[in-house]
Image (cartoon, rainbow, N blue to C red; front, side):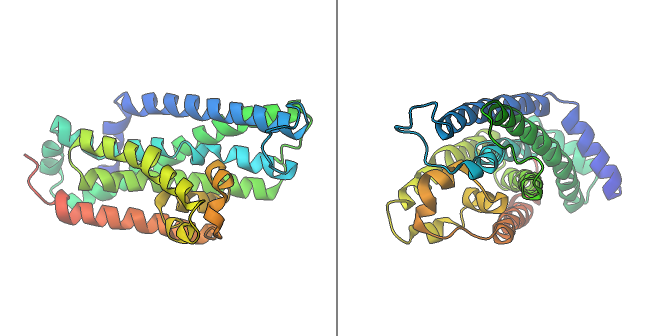
Length: 273
């Protein structure tokens, strides 16, 4: 079986189930809510509608990019989850046995999942960008602020966000290939992305020099790739200089490559049942 045929098969397995559109709806709702709430606060604060006291200290010219980056800053867990589920659901429902019987070249199957991951990552990325940019631009325009949608820098930022979404799906595929147990993989993903890394990055804002090390964590690298992040703005990157966007991208690529290779060598070649 060729890579094209294997990719078509993997695409059918994913898009004929409900998990992708359930996560897509959750992604749009979660990102849209956070973007709208932050857009209201920042827009009102920058125009003095909140009275000034306790308002976020963000220059007006930096608000649009910060709000648009909400898609990756708070929503990267969704492409990570869909990538993980693309693999672990096969172990859970025992469909990987028939897949390997039809396509004995296991590396080809994993490669096909990466191809489909590219497609679903772009799909989730577009949905995430729309969910973040839509309400953010509406609030900015409503308060008379510039949306920066005619700026080339803004569109470059949106393009890097799409790249980040694809890389997060690939990282999820690597996690799923390495950790066969679906519950364990999902719990691990949620604990790390929602608790461990955010707490570690927050702690770095109080410990000098720690930000240089934690800047290589996947979430921090993703923020560096995009170029903006509400978490980086809140913590000040621990007083450290964040990675360049291309360096953040290379770090994410390295995470994806290492996890996929480890998953293939350690787990993917083992017996399915």
